[in-house]
Length: 196
Image (cartoon, rainbow, N blue to C red; front, top):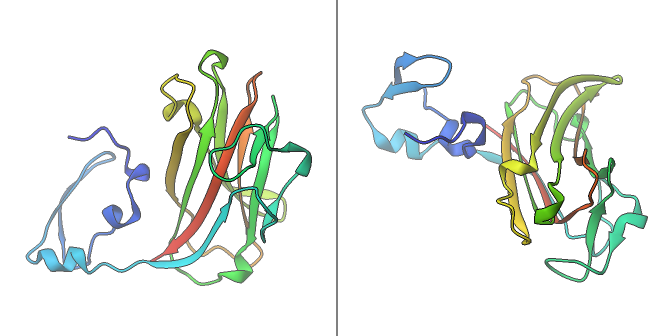
């Protein structure tokens, strides 16, 4: 069996057609029986929004402190974003009024991250859904899950389901939180919202 967590599976791997019968379910395993494999292959997803920030110019819905855009270390293009020690990166912010419906949304985030091996970087990718200043959903995933300790750019990628039936006033925010004492660099920061 795979050691991959359910929430780290791609969206298509988490969708079970209604025609499949659940044979067993507990908190870690779900086993289904289906008569037609084509039902599984025909599960549709809808991409509602996708944004890629390569830090080469300004992009909609990104809140950026331009002081932290640097041109001394980059993976693609000429620039990247330096997340300061004990600080926060730029953030992607989107109001649900732009996407409002009752779908289950999955947020897919990936970025290229560079943290020097000797730095023992302590940073997290944070996904938060807020409404009226209150967090409805908050999750932080450590970059150490994706960093094997060498001095190279690493792909950092997560997929998470967001709560169903978010109101039009809810806002999604995604950012990197550097809790350590060494800088972390990010490039090609991509956010996508996918619905069923």
